[in-house]
Amino acid sequence: MYLVFTTNDFPWLTIIVVFPISAGSLMLFLPHRGNKVNKWYTICICILELLLTTYAFCYNFKMDDPLIQLSEDYKWIDFFDFYWRMGIDGLSIGTILLTGFITTLATLAAFPVTRDSRFFHFLMLAMYSGQIGSFSSRDLLLFFIMWELELIPVYLLLSMWGGKKRLYSATKFILYTAGSSIFLLIGVLGISLYGSNEPTLNLELLANKSYPVTLEILFYIGFLIAFAVKSPIIPLHTWLPDTHGEAHYSTCMLLAGILLKMGAYGLVRINMELLPHAHSMFSPWLLVVGTIQIIYAASTSPGQRNLKKRIAYSSVSHMGFIIIGISSITDPGLNGAILQIISHGFIGAALFFLAGTSYDRIRLVYLDEMGGMAISIPKIFTMFTILSMASLALPGMSGFIAEFIVFFGIITSQKYFLISKIFIIFVMAIGMILTPIYLLSMLRQMFYGYKLINIKNFSFFDSGPRELFLSISILLPIIGIGIYPDFVLSLASDKVESILSNYFYG
Image 1 (cartoon, rainbow, N blue to C red):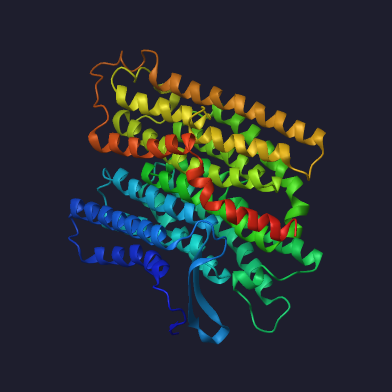
Image 2 (image 1 turned 180 degrees about the vertical axis):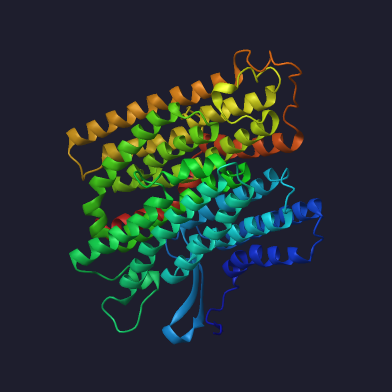
C-alpha cells in the first residue's frame, strides 16, 4: 500500500480529514487523570480544525462554479485501482462547515464528562474525521470507509456513557446501521463493477454511466435502504428515539446535528446524481413516505414521556421535509431540502443540548415528573422557548424559510398532478399544525406549574457562562439564516441547477 501524489494543489481536504483523528491519537500521551487538559486540548483541536476549514474554503472555493473544487487524487492501493479522491462542491461545503461548528460546540458541551475523559474525546475527534471524510469523498469505496468509520465511535459513546438502557440502545443502533451498511457495500461494488473489467469507483465517471432499468432500480433500492436507516425514513427509524433517549447530550448533538444529515446527503449525492432515472420513478413513493413521516412522528411525539425521545421524534418529523424536497425534483424543492439539512442541524443540536443541561440540574427524564422550572432557571427557560419556536418554524427563524421553500418546490413541480400536490400540501400543513402542539406541551410540562417548587429543599443553578455561550452560538446562525437564507442557498444553488439540468431536463 502506497501513496502517489497526482495533483499540484495543496492537499487542504486531506489535512482537514486526517487532522482530528491524528491529533486525537496524541491524547494517549496526555495525563490519564488530566480531565481539564483533555477537554481543552480537544476544544483547541476542534477550533483549529474549524478555522483551517473556513480559511481553505474562503480562499479556494468559488461559489459560481458547480464543478468539483479542491480536488485531490492519490493512488492508494494499486491492486484494484483504489484512489484517495477528495473534492467539494456546493452540496458538501455547507454540511462540512456545519460538522465543524456542531462538533466544536459538542466538545464544549461535554465538559461535565469526567469518566474516561481521554477516550471520550478521542472518539468525538474520530467521528469528526469520519463525517468530514464522508462529505468530501469523491470515490465510492472511500465514501463507504468513511461512512463506517463514524459508526464505532457512536456505538462506544452510547454504550459507555449512556443511560440505564445504554447497552440495549447501542446494540439496536449498531444492528440497524451496520445491517444497512451491507446494502451500501453491495451497491458500491455492483455499481463500480458493472460494464467494465476494472472497477470504476470515481464518482465523476459513474455519474456519466447508464444502466439497464432493472439494474438501476436494484442499485437504487440498495442505496435507499442504507440512507433510509441513517436519515431516518420510516419504518427504519425506531433506533433513533432509543439512541437519543440514552446517549449523553453531547453525543445527541452530533447525532441530530450531523449523523442524520449524512443519510440525506447520500440520497442527493448518490441516488439523485448517479441514478436519476430510478430516482424519477421512486420519487412519488418517497413523497408519500415523507408526508406520512411528518404526520406520524408529529402524532407520536406527544405520547413520549421521555424528554429526549420527544425531541427525537420531532427530528424524524423534520427529516420528512428533506425527503419531500428531494422527491419534488425541482430547483426550490432541492434547495429547500439542503437548507433544511443545515437548519435542522443547528436546531436539533440546540434542543438536545438544552435537554441535557436541564437533566444535569434536576436528574429527571420524564416530562410528567417535571414542572415549575421556569422560576428557578429563567435563562434556560428563555433559550429553550426561543429554540422551540425555531423548531416549530416561527417566521424569522431558519426552520420557517426552509419549510416554506420545500412547500414552494412541491407547488411548482411539473412531475405531479395538481390534485396530488394539493393533497400533499394539505397533509404537510396538518403536520405543521401538530408540531406546535407537542413542542408547546413540552414547554408547559417542563417549565410551568408548581410541581418542583413544592418539593422540600428545591433549588438549582441557572445556566452558567459556558452553557449560555453555547446556546447563543447556535441561536445566532438560526436567526441569521432565517433573516438571510441566501447565505446558505448561494453555496448550493449552482450545484442544484447542475444536478437538475444534467440529469432530469437534459
